[in-house]
Image (tube, rainbow, N blue to C red; front, side, top):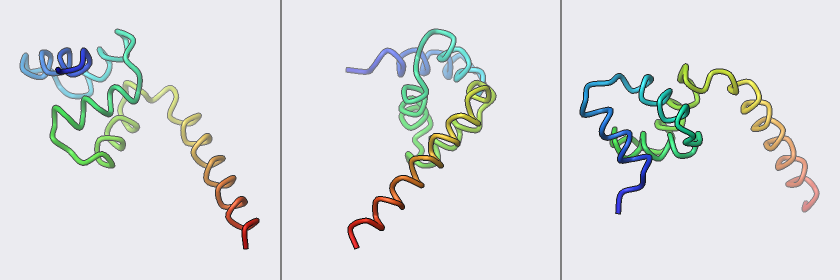
Length: 87
């Protein structure tokens, strides 16, 4: 069964919408960033890493890009610090 995010993305893609515009519609309709990544993988047939980059760098998600990067940096710091404790 295809998920609602994929159904919506597929309909917009088949209608000729640009992918960034599709991401904006998906977000406006309440789909999460993770949903958008899944739709990007499924509809564009891209590897996960490339799909994440496209969604992260999109205009649709630009307003939270800095906070997402800060969260990622914080997590990486914690992981690195934790790795040093087990030595």
